Length: 118
Image (cartoon, rainbow, N blue to C red; front, side):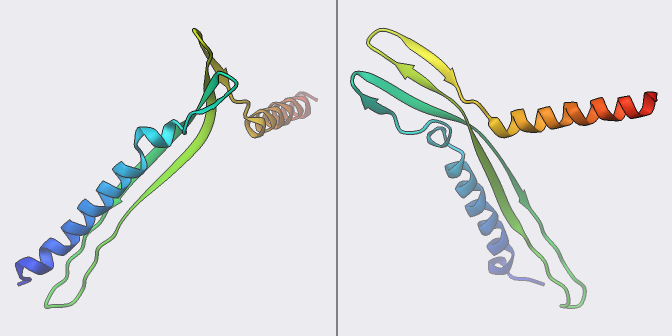
């Protein structure tokens, strides 16, 4: 039978990984450092997504093992808040890759339906 130290080590690793994931996905990740020039402040913003997973395992007769933990995160710019003396405005980011992919998908569907109707 495993002792308390052996069973708490994977749990401690999971807690550390969860804390790291929370730290990585905080508000400072979504909102960048403000930049001020000539009385205008720009605060960049990003969409941040993440996930966390863990694992486990066991075995019979002292054989077998297992464990596994991890997290992932992605961040994409979505725009910026522009702050002047008495006004705040939102300037969205233009995702050229998305626009290109959407155009390709529309063209592919057009040619597919044109080919099917002939």
